[in-house]
Amino acid sequence: MKQKLLLFLLFYNSITLFAQETKEYVTAYDSLGRFSDAEHYYYLRVVFDYYTTKDLSEVKEFYNTEVLKKRCYSKNKNNLVLDGFCVDYYENGNKKQESNYIDNNLNGKQYNYFENGDLKSVKDILYDEELLTSEIKIIQFWNDYKVQKVIDGNGEYEEYVEGVFSNGGIKNGVKNGVWTGNDTKQRIKFTETYEAGKLISGISTDKDNVDYNYTSLIEMASPQKGWDDFFSYFNHNLKLNLFEKNNSAPAKMIISFIVDTNGKVIKPRIIRAPYSLINSNIISFITKYKKWNVGKRKGINSDSFFMLPIIISNEK
Image 1 (cartoon, rainbow, N blue to C red):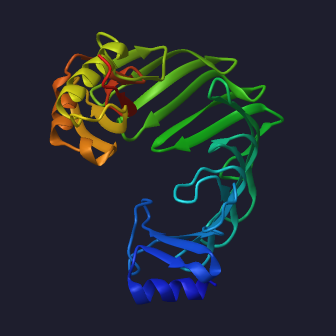
Image 2 (spheres, helix red, strand yellow):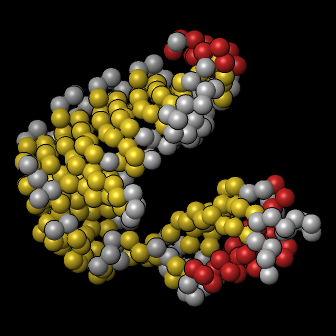
């Protein structure tokens, strides 16, 4: 089957391919997860039984070496909404991670492995479907030297996530005591104190040796007059300028933008909208709303990214 898919890619040089007789749907992606062509793809995604009405679709991804990259199940055939058991693999074919999902959220036991196949960590993840929050507990952990540092939820843990390295104590599965680390993206070092998994205080030091105190890891930017004011402003301006005269139905759209460290809206985009509402004026309305509280990450001013659903009504 994999050879057949590769032949399709090479022959058509297409991003999206169909094989109706096998009920499979194939797309190609680059290393950043963007759509790719047949010559430069990093991995293929194969959705099985694409043309059926099954609630869950089996999905497999293959590296360009034809080695299995992922095996999972998705509620959405076009965009992954993971549900159930999922396995990720290294390029050498060894397991990288075994996880369980509910509606694209991790839930249950998670096993992580070193590239040689040795067990690296065991975590318990509890997702609260009502609060939309997750609690993660570290149960077992081995460092790069294969020394077990966390045993049955207690010990010393270290992690590296998206350019941030940190290490500290674990008690009953959660962070406890003093943690230290550095963030290569922000170019800072930091020290944090935890009690039973809750951040008590933190201090970060930037490249100029300036200290910043904080009690929250991330503070998103926010409108100075509140979100109700922002949505009211947006709805008021758009419904006057963009609705078709005879259209009384509410319009739904999704927008994205960034509030930068100066409190300025940058990179506004229309992610989804009815065709009649796709208009450059929308971008103008977003950027003209200027009264923002700047976001912070570890006490330091930071960009905040937003993707917001908007419902525009003709009601007065």
